[in-house]
Amino acid sequence: MTTAIIVAAGKSERMGAGTDKAFLSLVNKPVVAWSLLAFERCPEIDRIILVVRKDQLIASKAVCQMFGISKLQTIVAGGARRQDSVQAGLDACDIDTRYVVVHDGARPCVTSDLVGEVVKAVKRSPAVTVGRKVTDTIKRVEKGSTVSATEDRDKLWAVQTPQAFQVKVIKAAYKALGKQNVTDDCQAVELTGETVKILESRLPNFKITTVEDLQIAGALLK
Image (tube, rainbow, N blue to C red; front, side):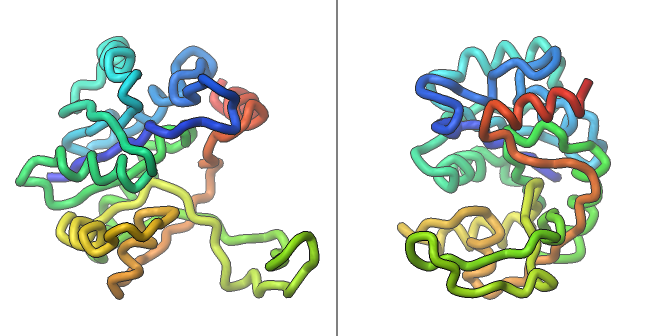
């Protein structure tokens, strides 16, 4: 059994006070509905757990009903940090879940095909993420605005979601974290010494963080 955890419980601070970007209108749907539909249409996904802010539980249920998300298992409230929200999703997984796919609800351009590729890959590796090779020159700035060094971009990838895990691997990684902060779920797995594989995402799959991102996504999804 493969369960998807769609995380949409962020504070949306760069969108402005009181804004929840997951529920902003994007073309003709709320932002989070695009991800829900991509996972709903993916044959490799059996169940969906949606993690949202506590004040959006009722609105989330209405969105899932409106767009016919039949694979929805439950909607749970997230936590203060992203990893707390993912943990809430893991806690809600049924005992027969073998694989977990975690996705940022603010990445509406994700496709069902990409989700399927990640699920197939995680059946061969403990953990899998998608990403893109870095093409810009990357400078390291350790203090103020002074450049400390230029990184070797040939070894660098910009990591995205979905990220997929064998369920025992991700649960063990989160248990081992304690109070340590991570910026994505693969980092938690890396800290345990498990192997993480990366698949190249060739289509736009960026995360909406600003109004400009919302406008770009709208142009792509029309």
